[in-house]
Picture (tube, one colour):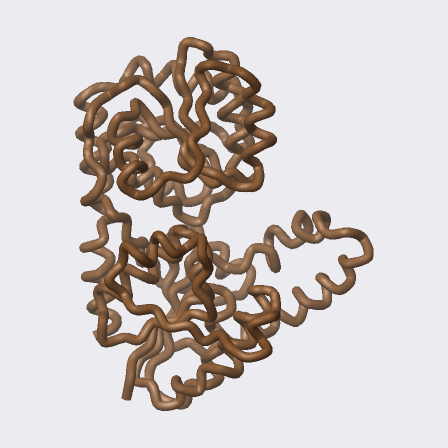
Length: 359
């Protein structure tokens, strides 16, 4: 009898990938399976002691990544037949549950596949009109597959109350909250060099454009955009030649920690974020957070104690007001409160909880 950890694919150095590797390192008796490891995730894999096995191969390697992942887990996971415990995560890996004929079936949900639920309309609108009927058929099929698969699980866990409510709303299934592991032990207060930091991936739903527009109106405040993504060139065009806005591109973990450790504050304004590790990393370094009062940030950032939360759908002026507030309250007391708050979301706390569940 064997134990397995399943996740869709190692795509980037993202939060779900980090959770997968944390579990793989903490529970080496579990084999970790993904459909494929992509080059963008290689630096993360190189820094981990975990062994990750790929299911890819044969003709399906020519498929787009989502279809390949669906195929691999549905038809290439025969090794699960006599499993003792399987912990599934992601959107596509749960389809392997049909291969499991014995043992416990557990599901850790980072988020539901939002492209098929609450973000379906906006995702559909992004396709050319002639592709939309095909996408609609795929989503209808996928919803049925996903809901049937997770409905076979013995227990379902989610990474926040926010995701728990979303899962229940769209599938009718309840879950237990297990906050994800944040590597708080690697983040420390180094100095306060006065700059503000954005660490979010440069995609529309992270609203980094709102942050950039705010700092265009605050030439005496410095912003560092510490990430990359498809919106990079558009955001650079918005910033123009502003001397107080700097784009660094993606940084290695060590450099990221230095930037956070020397910042005055981290700004993070995603649309209905599932949980959000960046604010916790910032607080672990004793840095307050300017966030948005929605999604997972409502569970991590304490307004007035560890940062400032601004109203949903924020405008640049709201960011400017929040920066003014941080300038008034930043200091050792706020920094200590941030570090204290981050201790609730440590890797150790996550592993202890998962140990009780898995063993």
